[in-house]
Image (tube, rainbow, N blue to C red):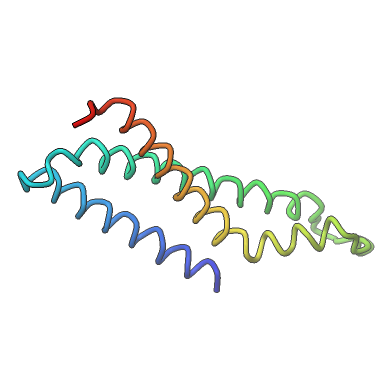
Length: 117
């Protein structure tokens, strides 16, 4: 179920980011915000991708011990329980965190490049 939420989150972020960026590009009242909009959209998207790569890297831990014939089951330890929780709920956590940190980084870059009014 968290994977359905992250898919919805990614689609909504892309659509809203595109709408806001286009609005700032075409409406002269918001043209001064274009530098902020496209940088936040770009770096938020990069953060979304990096967050999902982190989730895939966490899932590789569980795929390394799989064999065709199987073997004796591994004992559950604290690390395995923690990684299981991150595998189940990590997509929502890491993708949201990636978008937020990416947007903050884009905002910071835009503030640095935009002259003060």
